[in-house]
Amino acid sequence: MVFAVLVLAHLCALYWPRVDIQGPVTWTDKVAHVLLFLLPTVAGLLAGVRPAYLVGLLALHAPVSELLQHYLLPNRSGDAWDAVADLGGVVLGVTSVVVGRALRR
Image (cartoon, rainbow, N blue to C red; front, side, top):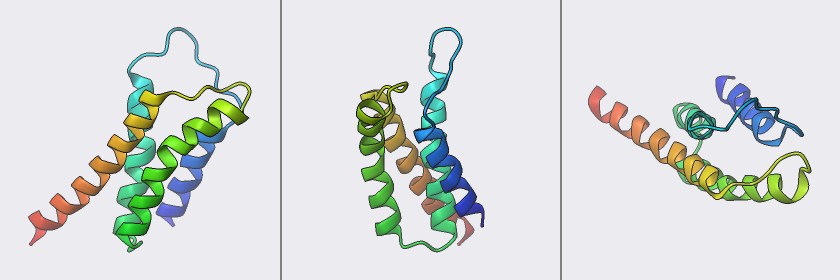
């Protein structure tokens, strides 16, 4: 259930037609991108989703989501650095689950 809610929030945040940000975009945007990919990665792995499928799909979704924002959503723009932050979130998510499981043993 948590995984499903996080995936829904993930998709809404990435594909909402318009995001109004007051003032300059700062590093907090990149933190948000890391979290948008880290949380579903952790939740999916803990829920038992096959790691190869989950990680592969999220890693592919990172650059694809930026391309879709750039080309299909007129009020959004794609950013290569956002895709890098997204991929960082996937890596951090996998790492945290692997380390957490190793520490519990």
